[in-house]
Length: 194
Image 1 (tube, rainbow, N blue to C red):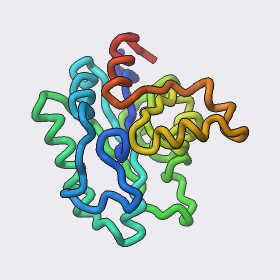
Image 2 (image 1 turned 30 degrees about the horizontal axis):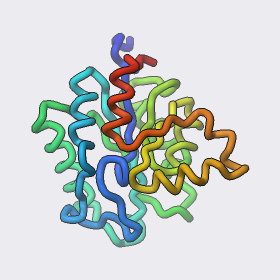
Image 3 (image 1 turned 135 degrees about the horizontal axis):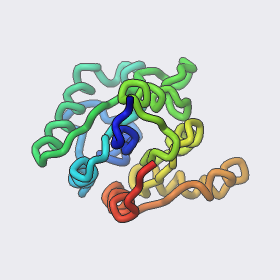
Image 4 (image 1 turned 45 degrees about the horizontal axis):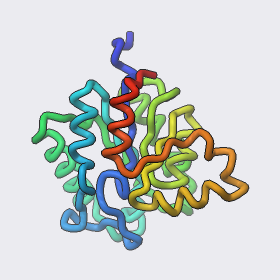
């Protein structure tokens, strides 16, 4: 049986939402640099009782640009930074595949979100998914989660593409914020409970 808080969750994309993104991929721990206010935003959500999960495409592994050991170091650094302020990240799910592998876990496919739901025993309907790309929006849409778009990372480019005909239907369901800090503020002020 699920606890009353079981579905009070927030799912986050990583690159461009929590940390700086790069067109050439984040390939090492030295390149993994948190965006201003992102760690504190995660901590605030965690302190408020939200279960935090991260869903991130990491095709640099399949491309031979990013060793798995380096990715795990980045994720441990992220967990440590959040834990140092009393917060907690419950799960980090990542897709290591290249786009042409046609896997089910690479966003915009819903596999990562489904994995999070299964492992955390939560429903996804109405759960906020904060991302910066069209893939994040489409993955959220596929499982009934609520897409939050941040303007950091690829966010501005994604926002511009939402005006295009093939994406216009998604525009009205996307909530747009300057960054993860602002998205967290909105969630905390709304008293969101799915």
